Image (cartoon, rainbow, N blue to C red):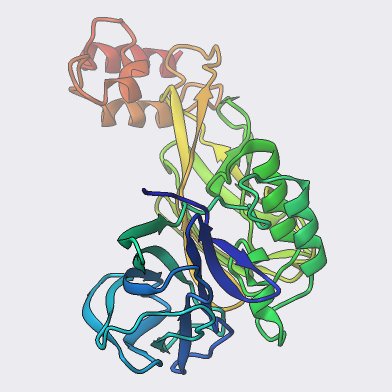
Length: 414
C-alpha cells in the first residue's frame, strides 16, 4: 500500500516531518543558522513505530549552492548504511539492520548527516529536507513496505494547511523583525519568503500577493510616456520597476535610443530623498545610469524611479522611434545582484504640414535643405532607407535626382 502525505515543518521545533498510516513520523532535526565554511550535523529520526523497522530507503534533498554533503552514519550499533548515491542537490541512502536487530519503539537520532556550509554563503538556515522514505517493517505476519513522498511545497503556505490564507499572513506578522542574527531564526526562517535574511514588510506583501493572485509575478521594468510626438517636441519617459519584492540599494541601468531622431537631454530622480542618480554616461544611442537608494523603508514593489527627457530632432523623416531598457542589474544590501528583464517604448511621429522642400523643419527653404537633399542624391523607392529621405522626392517620381535638386534650387532663389 502506497500512501502520500505532506511533509510538515513545525517552526517551534525546527524540524521537517511526515506522517502517514502505519509508518512513524520521519523527522529531520538540527536545522539551524550556520556560517559560511561551518561544519554541522542534522539528524534523521524515526521516533516511534508499532512495528520494528528492518530497512529504509531514504532520499534527502538540499541546496548545493548552500551546503556540501560530507557523509552519514548511524548512531545505533548494528545498523549500517548499505548503499549511498549522490547527485546535484540530492542524496539517497539505503539503511539496513546488519545484525538482524530492528528499530524499536522509542529509538532516537538514528542517522546523523554531516554537512559543510559553502564559502560565500550568508549566515542562514540551509535548505535540507526529507524528500521520500520507504521502510520495510517486520511483524509476526511477515515483512511489508510502507512509504511516503513529500508533497511539493506551496509557496506562502506557512502553516502547512495546503492553502495560502490570512492565517499565513498572520504568521509573517508575528515574525516581523526577525533576522538571521536572531537566536531563534530557525523557527522563523520559513517566513522569509524573499530569502533576504529578514522577515519584513516585503514578506507581508508577497503573502498578500499569493492570497489575492495565487502567484508572484517576476520583477520587470517599465518605461512610460507619450505615444506620439512632433519634431521639436520635448518628450518625458518615466522608468520604473514592477513586482520587485526585495530591498535594493543600487541599480545599473542601460537604455538605448535612436540618436538620429532623438536628442537625450538628461535624467532626474523622481524622489531625490529616496533615489539618487549618482552618475551617468551617454554615448551614441546609449545611456547608462547608476542609481542609489538612500531610503528603503516600506517601499512599494512597483515604483517609478527616474524621469528621462528627450527632444525630437527637427527634420526627422522616420515614422516612429524606440527607446529601450537594454539591461538592468539591481543589488541588495548583501551585494547580491539580480538581472531584471527590459522593456521598449515606441513613439510615433506626427508629421507636420511643412512646405515642400523644408527638409530640416525650420519653416524656411535654404541651403540647409539643399544639403540634406544632396546627401540623399541617387536614392530610390527600392532602397531600404527610403522612408528617411523620401521627403526630398519633390516631384514624386520615386527617385531623388537632378530634377529634385533643380526644383529645390528654384525655391531658394525665389
